[in-house]
Length: 284
Image 1 (cartoon, rainbow, N blue to C red):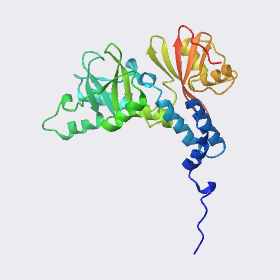
Image 2: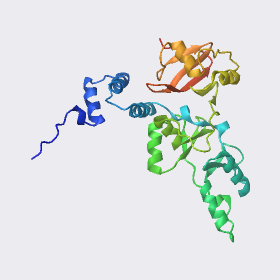
Image 3: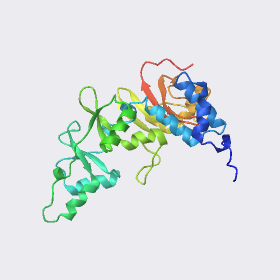
Image 4: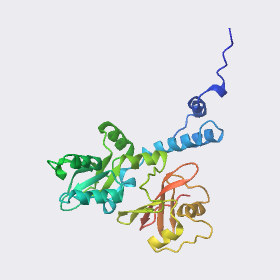
């Protein structure tokens, strides 16, 4: 009878090896992240897996307002538009789901799935109206945590929600893709532009800025005069100011602009919050 191979470290799954790495019993989330990064450095954990684990942990702390598409940037269609006009907007935007509004953007009447419009052309005799295609819109507060929202998306099998502010007005929208991107990174498709949407305005002097935003574009948008001789991106500028790789939660004041690292992993910083106003306590 042949001897079975021993169940040594070389034959254990990465999850089993990770369990060994966590025997130190971290006291908080920061210590857990450090142990995970140490495990990755010792080849006990794949770098991509580590990035996703960190993304999952960050999602538990983030809220809808951190990632939503602001009201002003929402692509919507009016309830009295002809089908041809709606199709034009759908093709130009590349979106498969469009909020349908009444007199203004606070009056969201439902969600249109563009694929449902195939019935318009299939039923040549009856010619259904836009109201025949509307699906109920789901409304959520901007303070909802992303891990809760992701669970609700999965259970209800919907992919888009309308975000409401504290006064009941529409603040923006969020999709399941927006949440998943916080875990696995940017999900680009054939309709995504490669160099736009670096900055999202959230009102009251608050912005979300991609860390890969070229400093030249940042200067043009905010009227600043940051040098791009040493670094090309705004994420590189923050790295210079901190003297290390920025971590989630880091806060730094740069010439009166208050940055906070919203999303980062052990290799790079992805998303920054920017506030124009009174400075926040900087990270030491």
